[in-house]
Structures are given as structure tokens and as C-alpha cells.
Amino acid sequence: MALGNYGVFVGTLESHHRDTPDDQGRWFHVNLQVTAPAGRYRCAVDVDSKQSVTGVQWRVLTLDRAQLPALYDLSAGYHPLATTPTSGALDYMRHPALRTRAGCISSLVFRPVQTSLGRLSGVRAWRTGSNLEAATALESILTIGARIAIFGEPFTAGLGMHNIHQNQGDPLGSQWYAENGTWQDGGTVVYLPDGRYCLFLSKFTTQSFDTNDDGHPG
Image 1: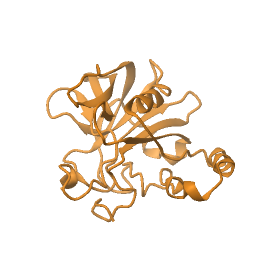
Image 2: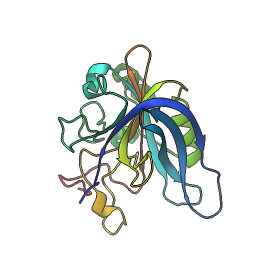
Image 3: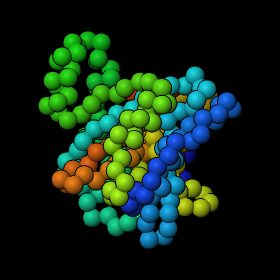
Image 4: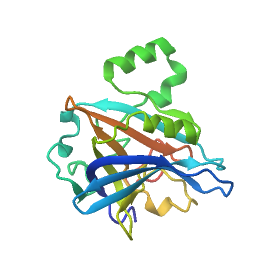
């Protein structure tokens, strides 16, 4: 049935902090406090669990304004998005500015060649690591006072956003399988002073890079 209320929230980054680590296996987030006319939103970016065997993967990339044209004129606040290629929605596998095969061919290409290709294209391949490494990568692009866009789903109660990660490719039998769908991926986008965007995208290692038209593993 996919997500029930996908969209993008735009505001000003006020602060950010990590969840306090514990031994209960709870999902671990970097929490962004973002202000907009309606108030302060908590945007919970899930970067995996301290105790989970499920690993996290992420990318940090810079895009030109023309590659995400729908973001430029958006006012502060929450904007629902249709899960279609023309609405401004994100899809890691289908959006022309986001899709990459680098993660699939990394073992076939020498690292210097990969590095050169990455510099030429401005796109970095997926990295795999711990929740703390993913949190550090996200924090490296955050600037207090910057304009920021959060793709995901709003909380059902209170001001906030979650599902700020890939929302497709969960395997059959997973509790999130029913939420799979195309053109509904999450992400954190920081507006840069030069007009470009810096993005942090993340997924879990259990989620497939290859999905069908329903967002299920292909």
C-alpha cells in the first residue's frame, strides 16, 4: 500500500543531536530541529540501531539546482507530493540525478578509476558502515541556520518527519514490505549558498537496489 502521506518539508535548521545510545536495540536517529511557520519540527533521520545486525548504507552528493527543480520555489512548511516522476518526489533507483550503478560494479573497477568517475559526475557511490559512521556523514553536511528540505512522511501526531530513508526494496516477510513503493524515498537536502544542493541519502542493507514497479525487490 506504500506510504500514506509522502511529501517534503522545508525549513531552517535550528539544531541537531543524536539519540542517546542504549542497550535495548532501539532504532538510532540523528534528530534535526527545523523551524517553519507552523513551529519547530523534529526530523528523525534513521541511521540504524546500535544493536541491530541490519547495516546501514548511505551516499552524500551535490546536485545543481536544475537537477531538483521542484525545490527551488518551495515555501517553508510541509508539501505533500504525488508518488510520480514529475511531482518532485525522490526515487533512488529511478530519478536521473540519483540513480547509480556504482555500488553494483565497485568490485569490477579499479579504485582510482572509480574516484575519477565520481569527481567528474559529482556522484558518490553507496558506502556501508556503522550507525555512528552514517551519523557522522550526515552531520558533516549540516549547517545551523541553513535552509533544509526533508523528504519523508510527517508524524501522525505532533510536528515532525520520519521515514527519511529509502522506502522501497524491503524483502517479503519484512514488517515494512507493505510500505514499499516507487517515488517515495526519503532524504535530507541542504541548500548551499551557491544555489546547489547537498544531499544525504540512506538505506538499510536488507533493502534491495533493484525493485519492480510496486517498489518490491525485483
